[in-house]
Image (cartoon, rainbow, N blue to C red):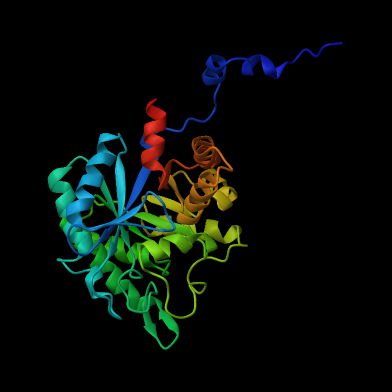
Length: 323
């Protein structure tokens, strides 16, 4: 006796599969990370992140134009300064590499939406995300520097700031500083649930931001914790975050889903460097179909509840989706 219900009827052809598809990955969902390094005429491919580069301001403009021409609506900028010090002074300098990049990109590609990473780790000599005393990362004194950094980005022309440091209270501090300086229109995308993950390894090579001692477990979240993520997100929303982010994405789909189901606010997810590099390495070995697995991974992130996806695959995905 044949069953009455035959789910395969709606899987028979690609046309019907498209019609009943529940989750759609779009170019409009994507944010592309760019690494801006001090200097001129520099384009260094990052060994652990094939297809990604450290680019000087004069070169990154071309990359930004390519991103815009592909229909990707936004980039997020990470800076690699010429000099580092204990107070991360180049993070909030008006002549800093990110401040210069914002102005240059806005001049040549004014419609591209620019988000900036607000953190100190790329700019400190010790590689930590805050001011250090002994072996302790100080929370409250760090907030003052993050305020200065966020305001300097807004003054240079950034469209959005994205604090990634995981210091307590930083969203409120940055919101207060932006409002005080006349930038109440600048939204904050908070790295709200950022875990102390092993998936960040390639990024630390790209951004030259590995800590010189210890690790970041005292301020980034403990990977086994699930409920704590909701507390972190709730606090950031209460402090004024406009968008909240979960980082990493692929191993934290449950967290993305929890955040989506508990809060009525745009949710971003960061498909991080380690996730990207694993796909690239397996593809180069011929073990996987890079296009299929990339689209499947990003669709799973979207299906879990992410509205926005930060991903190094963005340019490739934009080309694939347009075919």
